[in-house]
Image 1 (cartoon, one colour):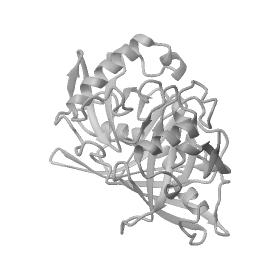
Image 2 (cartoon, rainbow, N blue to C red):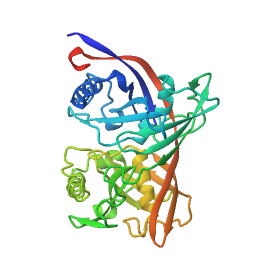
Image 3 (spheres, rainbow, N blue to C red):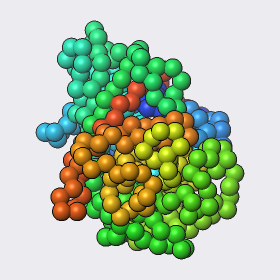
Image 4 (tube, rainbow, N blue to C red):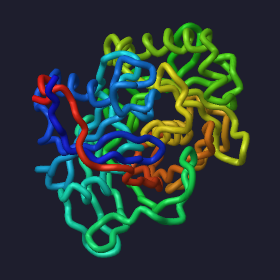
Length: 361
């Protein structure tokens, strides 16, 4: 069997990792593209043994970059979530952790030139239309990866990459509250269906029969919990105007509870069929905004900040994620201006990944 080589950069972005490609090196047709990415990752096997995936959803993600034609962006970032045990690719969501590596990867690829000690990279998230600004430390024309910044879920420290997210409201559904309600009830459980950076169905942990402080491993073995979660998620997805979401990773699902370690609130985030080992950047933004909106499932869980900008500390299984939210709340009407946070990234490898020639386009 002949094989074709595709240039790639293998990066950790935030608490996820995966291959970063130039979009021009991959098929334009999405069906062909999906087949290539399935071969790259080795989807369809729990260990991704015939590819470079890591056997869990945070290590089967793909970023595809190109120079942007938008006036407000330098780089177009197209994301793909490849399944682990199924030969399937979802192009609907985006990923904020993988986005953390977009700035450094774009510089490594030669898609953008550095501008001194700090290089601002304006990013257009193709999947959702969000605008993001990433500030990358640079030296001698290349990203700086070493530094003193630590993020939960990643060992060691690295150079900080501040991210500022704009235009994330209604990222998929077109509305912050896709159902038009602060609270909806499915299977007797109150939830808030919120679309900020990522559409998420949010419930109180106690209502779901858990504390919200369980480990990811403990939750992943609770099949009854996941059966309840999926039933609610499917109904909520339909109510959010997203149709049949049984084969899609969106909307995601999350639970909230009172903070246990000095943060704003405790959370557990689901991808959606496994528990996230830490917290998605997009999901963290959505949960932080939920914490700021009166009348949502976060009522009574935290002392809600009323002054903008507000830092919301989202506790998760590996630590916490700090989200700085700029907002307005005029006459009881909440509006989001931006959300920001600091992440890190690192180049792990580069070179070529090989796929069967028939798949390479």
